[in-house]
Image (tube, rainbow, N blue to C red; front, side, top):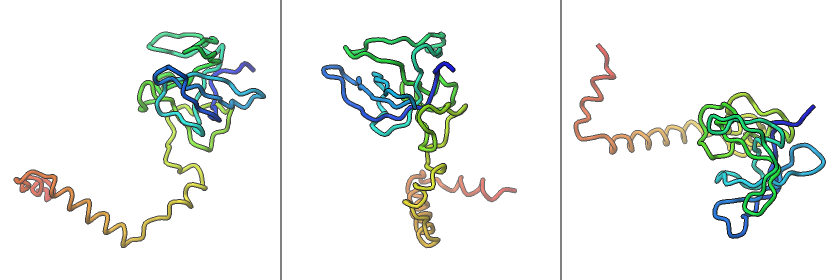
Length: 167
């Protein structure tokens, strides 16, 4: 089957010399050789799981269907491009930011049809690292949030109370 748009794992991320914002990535897409891809996406680091349009795949860029070809960007040969949410038809996710997927996706996987949750819900590993708040801590946070909300409202905060009481 021909490679097309797949999940990639960024194994290295280096700034391209003398090129503002450009980064040279090494990306594992589940094949023998890692791809070198140049991107200006600000949200990519080593360890990111990205969505890669490999050479020969078709993507929509600014409303135009283009075929991804090997290109030289900033003096570096780039074998593919990172997709942003718009190219994948995901809602949300800024244009120009690389579309990211959680750790549950492996290199070479097909990307999800819509933007995945990136809060670690898919991976048990993350759950253990962040212990749940106790009831006491939750209450303290809620109190602080309420206090902050009070100071944030305008002096005539009588209007807010009426709406909540209903008829």
